[in-house]
Amino acid sequence: FWAMNFSILAIALAAFAAVRSHRLRLQALWNAAQTELRGARLEAQLAAARLQALQAQINPHFLLNSLNAIASLVQIGERDRAFDAIGRLGELLRMALRSGSDLNVTLGDEINFLQSYLKLCKLRFESQFQYCVSMPEGLGERRVPALIVQPLIENSIRHGMVSSRALNVDVRVYARIGGVVIEVEDDGDGIDDGKVVLPAGHGLANVAERLRLSFGEAGTLRLERRAPHGTLASIFIGG
Image 1 (cartoon, rainbow, N blue to C red):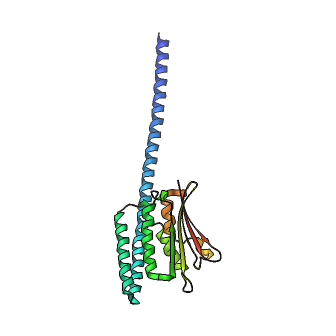
Image 2 (tube, rainbow, N blue to C red; image 1 turned 180 degrees about the horizontal axis):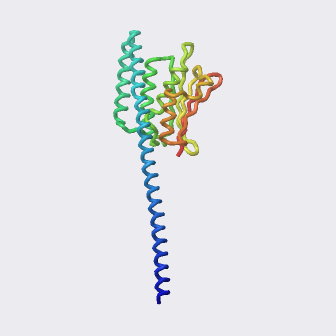
Image 3 (cartoon, rainbow, N blue to C red; image 1 turned 90 degrees about the vertical axis):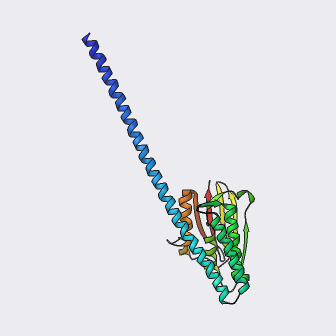
């Protein structure tokens, strides 16, 4: 009788120990999962804050460039073109404010914004600037970071325009296996080999970082020299 009771007690203690050990393992796994989740949430919050900061850098920069363009028209006495440019800028600001605090917009909205910006550039440079934009209708609902293309146009004008010939800028949006491609190609002076690696603080470095924060390795920006001259900036967004 005592031997049987001892055996039952030993089995019960062993079972209790096993259950307790299993419970402790589950608790440890739960705690680890909660810690990982909190870390992931914190990382996501930091990424979102970083993305908002980068987005905030683009807006005033774009606005100042537009105001400088209008000021240059006023200085040379182009009153009508300056009034038209002010109207275009008002349209751009309306479109920007309409998107509110959204960090992402549809490709359709992004291209509409870009069309207005290109018209403003055309008012400023007249025959020195030509452009073309193409995108299949089926891609209009794809979401991208806001103002992701405008810095590419700005870069083409800043580094590609020369007085001896007109600058042609071609914007192409198309689907590719595994994602969508946005290309901005110009026939300007082109880029130096050293500029293929984007320096910190550069407008295109901002674009590359926003793509990384939004899409990870599925969002990339590449610069290529074109022969005999010109530059191709290519954005790829996977998924």
